[in-house]
Length: 208
Image 1 (cartoon, rainbow, N blue to C red):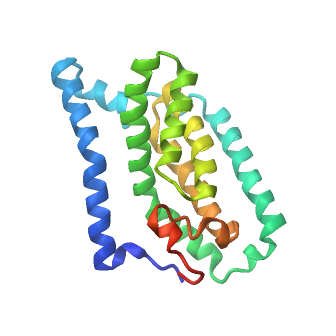
Image 2: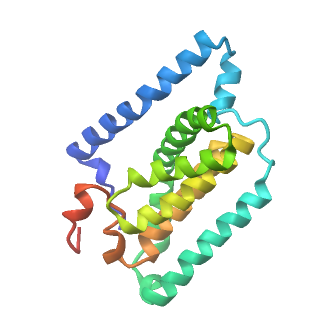
């Protein structure tokens, strides 16, 4: 059955501290844009990606790119972890964790794109360079997990690029969830250590 780490006291405390720290720069950026740049609240929320103007823009291309990532994950699973489909309660766990992970994925996308991409594009004034820089930053915070370093680098680049084109965090967060949970359940646990990062990755033991 799905084990929800956040339902213990340490997990809850860690979650709220992490969320609080992640929201501080975003709230600061919002205040600066609203008060100093004199943008309306609606314009600021659109810039953050929380009020996408058009859900259909680039939707087909985004889904095709997601399909490439997803098929690559499935291909690696079939080669190096062919018994992944035999995991007990796989469908239940995949669905449960996807639903519970979505708010956290949305916050990560808000942090990555709403905050960093919005600032990086003012520095570089080039969508491709901005996307690469955002992908590198996103990968760094997932160190030292080798699987997540690769996945978040390319995923971060892709997410940042499409964010600059359509400002739609909700679709990007959904695809983020599906890829992350697929990595968790499809690829060998010994590779990604239950998709942990930092000390959690190095201290992981089989069965955690």
